[in-house]
Figure 1 (cartoon, helix red, strand yellow):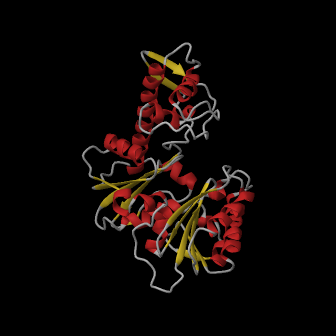
Figure 2 (cartoon, one colour; figure 1 turned 90 degrees about the horizontal axis):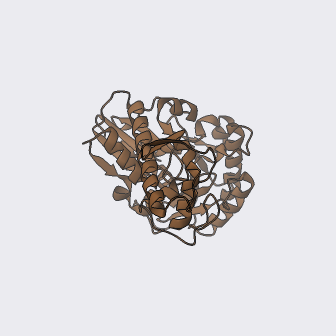
Figure 3 (cartoon, one colour; figure 1 turned 135 degrees about the vertical axis):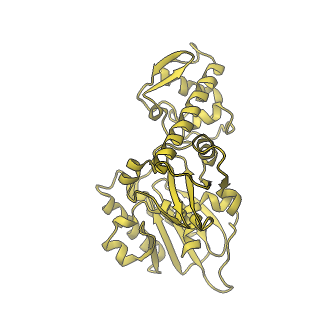
Length: 342
């Protein structure tokens, strides 16, 4: 990644490193410039978090302070989210060698490490709130809306008079309010778009198996190119159209002897439209009759967020986060946001 656009630290200062620690990737942005994404060794296993942080340490410039947010506590290896937050805090403390750590909370402030350890729950899955706090300042009057679609989830956050005004703060509350939906642009299994799919006059019950995901839909609809090097697919075969078609057709019990590649591409358009409609429905639920004046779309799946917003809120102006802060900073948006709101 190239350096994101923000005000660098003064010459001679080590600077601040902002971290968004997830269970699959760690995103980092440095106040002197630079953005990084480090995989947690392909698996959301907490014991490998230290290895990922060590890999990051050799890439980033010197720093004298850490700003931290996280979602890694969701990993099912932890018995509770409290345990997960504390594990991440311990890993970060070892990474920083006792340099100061400030942790973002969903009540809109940073906590020192000791406070975060004593009261960990407001620090759990708080990265969406950091991004919402940053972007809310763009429209300091009236109601606006942040829609952040990543690879797995979509965050829908109402912003009022320059600050986040969600109805929920925990994931449980946000799922109930429609402000969090487990539907993203890449990793969402297609069974989540069921239980049925309507296609060519028939209603098909989807197979409740992880046979295909949204990445297969994007390849078949031409939204992203084929990539023969990618094997992070449901069956381990490359990200090529014939294999994507085979994976997708299995969702209705078919294969490429029974149906064609064109049939699979046509079915993929139905799944794509279903995803757009599901997010549009969540947008309507989250707004609960309110009408925003502006929409901010963010995330690696911002194209999906934008299409869903156009369905739910036709004619409302949209601002794309990546156009405002650059693609590299946008790829680590929650970490970037921490630097802006410190």
